[in-house]
Image (tube, rainbow, N blue to C red; front, top):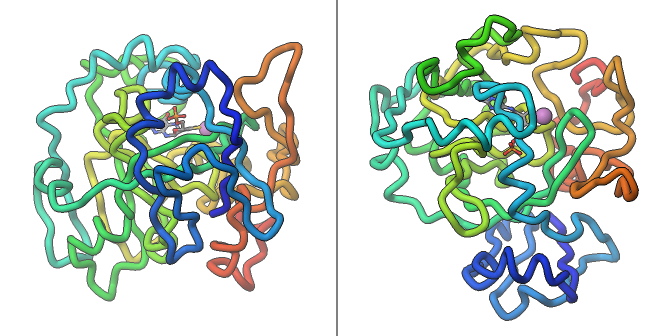
Length: 310
Ligand SMILES: Nc1nc2c(c(=O)[nH]1)N[C@H]1C(S)=C(S)[C@@H](COP(=O)(O)O)O[C@H]1N2
Ligand SMILES: [Mo]
């Protein structure tokens, strides 16, 4: 992953993000070609092989107030307005399917053996807006391997909490989603070093609206793959059915790799609005294949027709 930090951070970022900038220790994942960013370098200019990707980190206030989390409503501000109702402790996680260690676990017991790392990733929603977000996460591979999947496990399915009492979107009669929200990955995608289970953002625990207590982050895929507030993990032989594919199979597939060459049936995916985006400054930029992570992940899909497997 190639990240370039601007040496001159705008003042609004220094004030709102000082907490996170002070606490950042490193961006790990060197094995994946991820930039190692020491504390002293945090404000420095880092570029690799003449490639400049990413851009400056999106302000925390935007990352935590412009959300998609339909369990709390379909408006962008619904999650930040309603997600405080969600109880995230205790948090039970049910693990099933093709693995040696299955059953009911406490979230705390799963994650206590791991140390979260900071990962600054571009994040691209299928609706053609994007951000750059400093997640705190645990490599997904480390978490999944802890359950010892068997050789039969070819895919992994994740399910969000179903709790209509605390999730007003799940009580809505107008909802298009057949709750709970489900997502899935091929196991080799899940094991890719860029895939993380995020437990925090901006150096703090994940706010409810961003998917507390933990959510997937798969940065080369459209945002809907990055399922929030996970309570079930299931290892399967067959490709799981993800919620958006079930709702609109012509519009959303299983893979959902960011691809500027394949339009959504109702809009182009060639470019994106990088938040903050306003009427006067749309801040539009070209969308990159695999959201800029092609070098790291394109080989996962060699030989596949990406316009068919969208
Ligand atoms: N459970 C659940 N997970 C979800 C969603 C959702 O509605 N429900 N929305 C997805 C979509 S479309 C996007 S773009 C991202 C948004 O993540 P953010 O609000 O942290 O930016 O979450 C994804 N994960
Ligand atoms: Mo999205």
